[in-house]
Length: 106
Image (cartoon, rainbow, N blue to C red; front, side, top):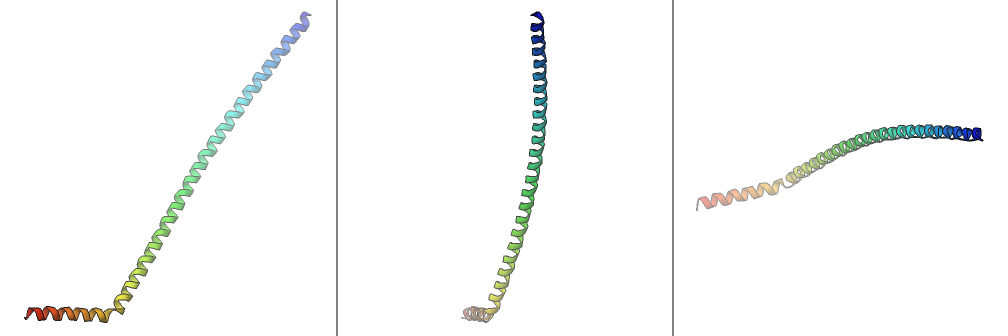
């Protein structure tokens, strides 16, 4: 009977050892997985930051190109307007000069 009890106690010790080893191994696996996950998350955040910076730079460059295009277009329209209305402008200037001259001599 004593032998059976000793065997049972020995088996329980072995079982406890196996369970303890399994817990330690599981804890190691979890820690390793958490470390990998943290590393992946950090890399993913760095990649996302890089993508956002590149997208922002592209948007800024595109906005600047569009701004330059609109300014050039407005300048060309302004020149065209001035050229189309040159005769009218010259006539108005002449009329103003005449008024000033007439007023001066009166």
